[in-house]
Amino acid sequence: MSKPFPQDVIAMLFKELSALPDHARLQITAAHCYLELFVHLLVVNKCKNAQRIQESSRDYPQSVKIVLLHEAGLISDKYAEILHWFRKKRNEAAHQVDFSISAADLTIFRGMKASDRKTALDDPKNVHHLCIEIVVGFWNAHVGFFAPLFMPELFPPPDPFDLKNRKSPTKSKEPPTK
Image (cartoon, rainbow, N blue to C red; front, side):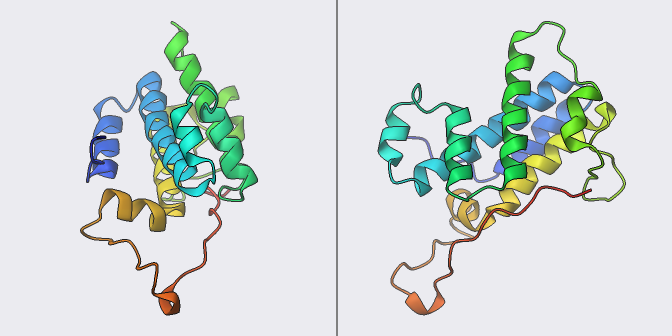
């Protein structure tokens, strides 16, 4: 039997990212860990072949899961691009001894600001803010799905037989804008 989900997943994210905010390798690796979990949960709960996907992680790596979510319309073009970027950077962080993030690495975020509308997400000094914005933004874009999984006592799943109050599935919101 699998372990239950941690109730305070977002608090855990902030704690981990706050530990070493100037350490790009830690920031990218920790943020990707949460993004990978969220992408996996969406895929295995939204795709028709969920059992096959869950049983064969070698056939369905993170890159394929991102494509599946994108093709299904559950994430936008921009989120797909960002998730692929995080996956690539996480691989670099895990395998390159001299890993760092430069302005050239952040061109995908050119002109984007954090939710405070001041912090530039394309500045290597702000990788900590970038990681928080992207993970929390992804969570928020799918909060109706994630909240009942991670906080069932606060957000009980909807009654599937209550057709009157049933909501239609929503598309993913865009990441922070320029």
